[in-house]
Amino acid sequence: MLDGWNAKVFLFDDGEWREVMPNSFKVTRYSTNAIAIAINSSGSEKGGWVESWAILMTVKNDDEILAEWTRVVNNLSIAAPNVAQTFSMGAVGTLHRMVL
View 1 (cartoon, rainbow, N blue to C red):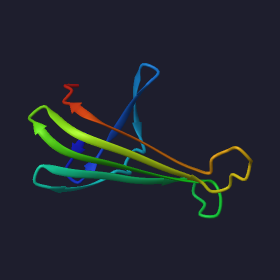
View 2: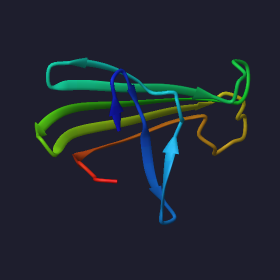
View 3: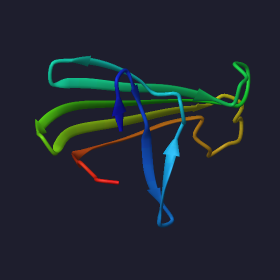
View 4: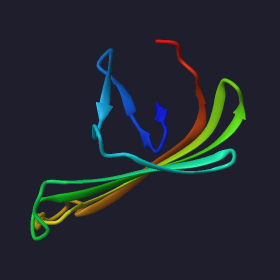
């Protein structure tokens, strides 16, 4: 949900909508395009984890936007073998307006 220069991002998980990183997403806009970004962490720069999300969007029509989502995570304190310290994931698709 875009609201001025802020965004609320939700995931559908276990049959419920859950907000991701509340009050963290900031938006940059120009004409038909927008980028929502957020960074979250466990609070320590020397251990724990850091996570970044970026959602790039452009308007398709009054009810749809084309969006590309990227998530990058660094688990700073993982030293176990066969466990990824860093990973990323992404998706692309059309988002449809929902009336709540």
